[in-house]
Length: 171
Image (cartoon, rainbow, N blue to C red; front, side, top):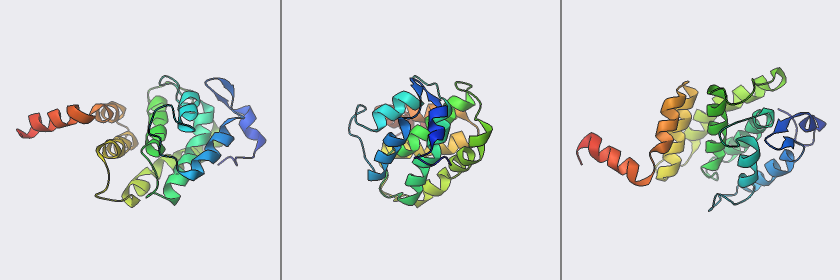
């Protein structure tokens, strides 16, 4: 994992160019923000730079280990964005909407992605709201190499999830 104070970030790119600004945004995550709006920081800037319109980049691959390390350290404190952003980056990678993971980032990136089930199992079971449950289910699907299923799960929000369950189980 690239240290947040490493000059290596300048050699990575995100949607807007040089990734030297990403470590400062990742440091803000240590406060475990739970945004109430899509425009809340630091997630707004991280999403915009790392998974811009469904495309990803080398800075995203370097960021995922940091995001998931925080999630693993304090799974009870995370909001859904801590799982959804890495899931979305992995979805983009699986769909060919980003470069190959650079060899220098492969180990840390794939180890972090593989840690998602441990994080999910450590979360406050029985206390997950519907959004977090859908994000966690999508994470499991993407880990299994099922990007279409992962995306379909993420589409089951609010009334559409209730409608699906009513249709499926005749409720």
